[in-house]
Image (cartoon, rainbow, N blue to C red; front, side):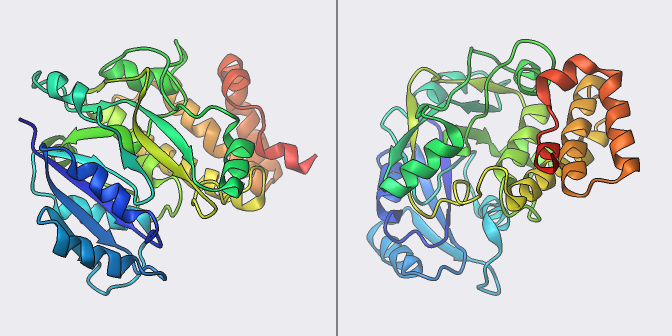
Length: 314
């Protein structure tokens, strides 16, 4: 039987937290639920304390200074505290469905498999949240990938020039061997207040042998409401470009350090970073540098990056 630690970062989520926790408690495989409270301004800490009293598998932790450190640092603290062989993630405003670990029970019998991920659904908890979500992500409520894949085919499918695997997958649909994270010293970039999950998943796809699980139906549900971090960033605003640039910069700096990184994917990350960097602070030398790299591989440039940030400068 799988033995799983579920890590839940908690920040201003008192209205949703109990449902999230109880959705994880339904599984015998979940041996501990780690609530990492990040200095909430609502009653989340009180709800956490009540849940630890009600359920023996629920544990509560805070940062040593009891301050607010962001989702990256909060999840990293959860990784340090996790004691089980497998780790799963859940946000405090999301929840698991009954099929959450069905694929994992079979796929993890293969010791080569280090991580499994599936599809997530979307539940709109408020009308304003629904409007903001659809404006940002269109009307698709099932987030999944296009085909079954494993190993390096997953990384190449997201960032290479071949068959496109899909848009993304979510942490709340991922189960990973703790030993794989420890082997590669993988953790969240604490400098990223937004997109630290996308940054972490990128590194995970490269370093670990992942495999698709259930991709034709959701195994977890994402709750969308007025205060979601990701929907609060308005497309094509200065804030949007800044946050996209920080993610692109983190990916590119990491990719440069990987000796076996395919050249076309390294260029992909570089173009992404320069797109946002130039768009935010255009200068002749940066523009020349960007165009020079684009000309080295025009097909990649046209299909992946279309001067997204430069558009706002006319």
